[in-house]
Amino acid sequence: MTNTLLSCITFITLAAAAAGAATGGLGRIVGGTNARNGDFPEVVSVLEDFLLGQSEHLCGGVIINDNHVLTTATCVQDYGATGLQVMGAGTNLGGTAGYEEFKNVQRKFIHPEFNASSKANDLAVLRLSHNFVFVTGLITPADLPLTGTPEPALDTLMSVAGWGRDQYEGGLQLQMKAVNMTYLPYADCQVVFGPQLQDNNACLTGDIGKGVCEGDEGAGVFNTADRSLAALVAWHVGCDAYPAAVTLLAPYYDWIISMFEA
Image (cartoon, rainbow, N blue to C red; front, side, top):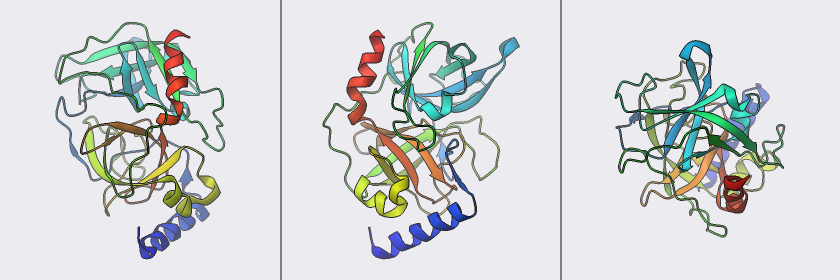
């Protein structure tokens, strides 16, 4: 990363924080393109499940086996398990394809060292009441990065997909959007955010007009070249081309797997 880019990002970050724009709230896809069915078969919408069959998108998540989904603790901390639902196998929250799989959540596991103030260890595992039915190319689990997997290199192109807002304070999207962003490892990201950045965080940056914002927290961060899962979107400062913090998953592999039998 150039010194100029670091200076610009640092200025934007500090200005937004000074204005009170720094938020631990949900992230979004800005300036993305419509995702097609099967483009992101591992990605789900985490929904607040209301009475009378109504639901509303809260954040993103990633399928990690046939009855567990990985998301962020920030997204689900204020909801009971029975008040949550997930949708997989589709890109439109209206269920327009007809083969979407909606599953109720049976149990919720928040990382025991999650800190709501600092957003440290911002992960949660959701156990579903019924298993997903996997269909190749339509709905499949992601491969978790093993403990010790190196984080992506500086400027690696990463892909993110979700249903978040398309502009600051805009509306949530019915159609899944996808966007490519570049990766900043922990050391480079720490220059931008300083002590606000926690262990096992890194950053994504996008071109002007592209980024994440409200509604994309918990979205999977995939290496665009080989489709390997590296992280989840965690939190952001503003939207658009502002940097977004992500939570790397490799350091949490053992804890995530242990939740399958909890």
